[in-house]
Length: 208
Image (cartoon, rainbow, N blue to C red; front, side, top):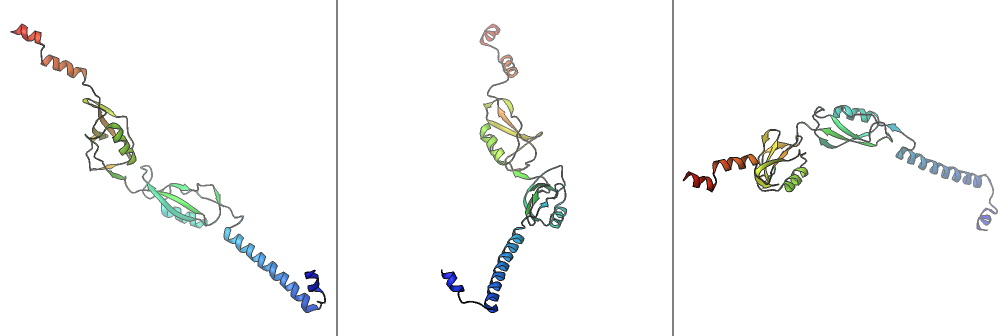
């Protein structure tokens, strides 16, 4: 009833012109909002992510920016097979379809091997304690080497290749370590040598 009463007695080109103008303006505002929203969200836009793994960070950045993508260097690692500054990994991966201005995260190859201060674990740690500390620091470990005549599973040394390591020195994290631990018993050949060196009581009596 209210709307009918409002239009009762209303006529003329000016009145209806204003009504049409209001409708046009309303549709224009709605259309403008949806257009801006589509532009802001890049609705319907699909860009294939190019592959930049193996290329230098400068080339990777240029390639991704030319594809209307943003570059973020998220981390660095060491890979001896790639030159320093090369891209090791990218996220999203090559071939994925994304919208423009999407961030592409890169992991870059470090310049030189990452060095870590070797912890004080020799002659004061068990095998389990030493393995836990070294793995936390990022070292890979070979099977432990057993040393006869030392307490079982007691760490008596650590090697990297043929080199014996010492607490406090800087060590490459990219090469495996070997922990030297006690075997908990004396080697049988050493026992035989000791028996020959120290004759039994019966032998001593015979000599007398």
